[in-house]
Figure (tube, rainbow, N blue to C red):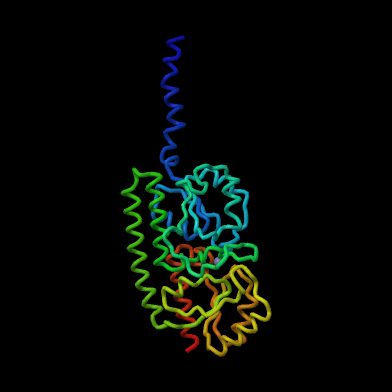
Length: 310
Ligand SMILES: [Zn+2]
């Protein structure tokens, strides 16, 4: 009996080797789920080969209403970290998913619950934090990542969470982050230069996505087509907007592809403004699959629209 066990020993070692030997590289990956694609891009940049990142959104969705897929719950159940925008941006879909995931690591107030808004001072904070009127910005405007300088705060929060989860890889995360920030900083200088001649240029958009972007680059965010965030425009609001835009010579209408084209198109036609369609997350339009490519697209679209108006 004893000798039989001994003779089996090399086979057992081999089987165990097959079971476990091939897994460490894969198993060692930190599993991250992000709500939006910009956060996924930042997490891949900082985490490099050490992370496996899945985003709930693909880039084309409304950031306030990513439609549920059956894959979300098991994906979130396995996640080591959940990376989100915060300010209740994801209120309509995320709390229910976190609960359904039954994953203790990503529940609110756990280290795996990574709120990237930590350190951001929100703009346009309403007086009440009430969702009942359809307001999707109850704690202020959550679209801060469209300002590439504030995006660095999200990147810092992601770096911190990865280091907390896997401190043994701190040096690698920091190296990756610094390399990405160097690239981003060079791009920010390029974008500031490109948009400098457009300082004070007025524009409207469908949803209030562009408050931080406009503040960063000195553009004049005139109004939104929506009555307020998450509330469809009335015919009267659109008429008043057209009159005000004509009086004030507003040259640019931004349309986000998440929303119907009809109103922005009509407003552009009636006022003589140029309509541009802009992504709000990487992957929202062709050739915008990374954050930097998306910002390039946004900046160049504004520049081209302003030139059309000259
Ligand atoms: Zn919003």
